[in-house]
Length: 137
Image 1: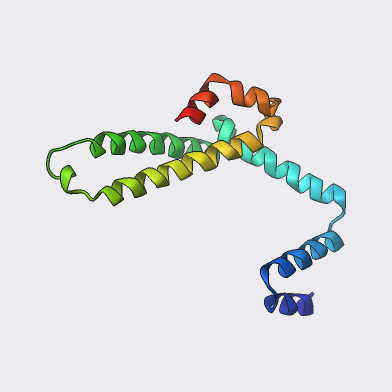
Image 2: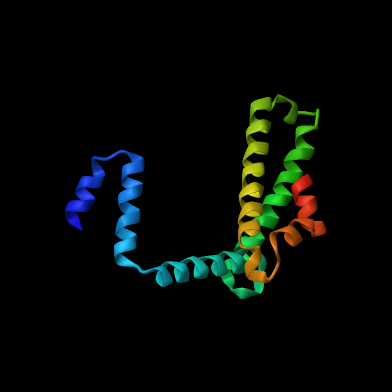
């Protein structure tokens, strides 16, 4: 394994990715890989959709809620024309909006990818009212 790792250090990304896939295939059979994938989906689902599943899930839910509130505050302050807000560079507001959009997009995509764990088809997930609002936002 050590010689494989040393060889990988000198390869380009696609060659390393291919070699890493070969190593995983040698170490794990299909059932083990599927089991890890399934467990990961369940963990992500619990973190994003079931706040009562644990402290980490409550923390993630709180962080998303805080992000929503901060996004709204930033949106309101961006339109403020009094000092000190009118002296804020437009690039600052753009960067802030971009960061919030990225956070919300990652959260939505992760929820979409694991919605099957909760028994929803991807189509049913997309047409739920709250998810439609997320898409429109």
